[in-house]
Amino acid sequence: MNEIFSKEETNTGRQREFDYLKGIFMLFIYLIHAFQATMSPEDSITRWIYIFATMSGAAIFIFVMGLGTVYSRNATPVGMVKSGVRMVIYQYLNNLAYVAALLIPYPFVSGRLTGAGMDNFNYLVVVYIQYINIFFITGIIYLVLALLRKLNMNIAGYIIIGAAVSIAAPFLYGTTVDVPVLGYIMKLLIGDAEFVSFTPLYFLSYALFGVAFGKMLRHVKDKVRFYGMLAVPGIVIVIVWWVLVFVKYGSDTSRMYAVLTDAYSQPDFWHVVASMAHIFLFAIILFFAERSGTEDGRLRAPENPIARQILYYSEHISKYYAMHITVYFIALGINGYEAFRSYQCWLLALLSIVVTEIMVRGYNMLQARQSRGKKNNRK
Image (tube, rainbow, N blue to C red):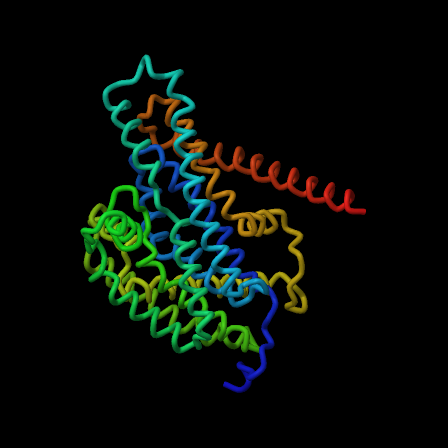
């Protein structure tokens, strides 16, 4: 073990395999949300993609967020509280953008809406005014991590609390609190409601494990051997998971899809363990894949434009995530708030990739130009 770990923190650079992991998954999000946001039935290919994506998905982002707090120079308790509050506010600003995207086409299509289209419109507007998703749970989890950082929690503490949360979550989920205001807040944190996509209750464990892993990773001096060692239990768990899934559900893909969809947003302890194994295995594959493309194994800025784009996705993931849905909502409204066919959803995913890229790149260019202007004015 002394050949792998060091008492001093030696591995303090960027852990780019996790950047690639986030960026790659953004492409899956484009496709899956093209169906979900437009209330369209998934085709068989998309269903299989989603079935396998349920073992990573949002868990990747929350785990990497936890890991990132260990590597960030600004991750002080005060800094994390500010980030948490900012992300909660971002959630509701994002909701306003979603509702605006739903409303923009309405005046132009209201005269030809069917009953189903009108019902969908009313339902979506009500849901997305209160919508709770990745930004909200990230914000709440930042607040929890800030407290634990303030308490100087050690690695074992993060692991124990993370395991305890994943075990307790199914027993706490949906607990009602019959107190005005407080009851609504508790519903956002641990409750069951149509406008709650994910709850902090279920995903806190991923962040806690991310912090613990990050603290451990900083002491790894030989990542090749460390990842080689970690890959063995990861492969075993992944194989056992999918063997059990296919043994239990066989060719009944509809039931498999329904069960794994529920387990994705409400994972129990075993599901969390299996998800962590998938995340580690994907990251390990990406780590060795990037090393294989260099002569000395050292990381450099990638020359491959696809690799650069994936890292750009990762760097600006919040912007891409927030903006891509608006494209789908506007398209849904133009279509009378009714579902699309499968091939149309694939085309919508491609359209969203292009439009979102223009919006994000344009925003970043304007922001950079504004920042340069401020620096020049100071001079």
